[in-house]
Amino acid sequence: MKVVQLTRHGASSGLEIMEQEKPILSNQDQVLVEIRTASLNHLDLWIRRGLPGLHIPLPHIPGSDAAGVIVEVGSNVKEWRAGDEVVIQPGTFCGKCPYCLAGKEDRCASYGILGETEAGVMQEFVCLPSHNIGPKPQTLSFAEAAALPLAAMTSWNMLKNRAQLKQGETLLVLGAGSGVGSMAVQMGRYLGARVIATGGSEEKQKLAFSLGASEVLNHREPDLSKRVKQLTEGRGADVVFEHIGEATWPESMKALAVGGRLVTCGATTGVRAEINLRHLFYKRQSILGSTMGSLADFYECLHLANQKALIPVIDRVFRFEQIQAAHDHLEFDHSFGKVILEGWN
Image (cartoon, rainbow, N blue to C red; front, top):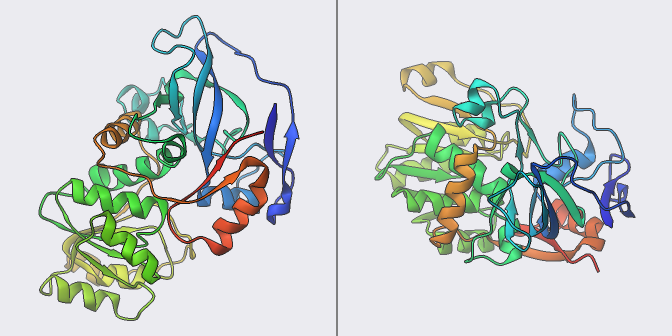
């Protein structure tokens, strides 16, 4: 079968299409899935470049998000059959610790992500434990389904569990044109919040409106926080959804209301951020970190997609053989939504 292999860290030229043996079920609790589509995340760029402190043996198969069809099931697997259309759940965990047994798998000490801590899904066939798949929503194409898992799980956990966004509150979503940002706008609307979104271009701002944002601002312009305060009669946002990092952090903090919660899952523009501690404690604000989500979050996102409350936004579709061009597009020319890979032939 064909696989995408990262052979060296650095530029996209380190990604190659190679041949290797088709996998076989190593135990009877696994399923064998034929991968039809996969999507890129910024995580894939970071893995390709090399992450400080994370040693990844090379060659490495990347990819966290995918959708496909089951071709074989182990004898212990009763809930799935060959021919079932599925979405890959990218989180890995021990299944035995107190967190896993309590349904908080994302807090497991051994929690990992396919394509980061172990081989990923950018291969024609992949063997996975049955808890690493879910039913593909019938409302979604294979391309849309591949765009769903990582971004949706992350956004839902951030808003529903960590920030506990409530009906009637004001949500500020930074970078609404990204995978997690576009999910957050739709989820905020679903949860009954007033959504103020930001986009760095006119095209991304139009997208945010189409997804349900009430107001859309440009986070590249100065005094973003003042515009948010103007739109909220001086109060600010109850919840700020952050993932851009260093470039937007100061204005994100200034835009936060008294008693507000800033929740963050990433730092695409840098990891350094300053905090005015006097403002933090005097305004009774909270800063919340979040990564991925639980199995319950994954299935809730599939449910929302089946209800058409979540529609993944697709930027561009490439063939798997165009993996280098797909990475370059995400890194340098990305417009909005997810970059998809399909078709091995």
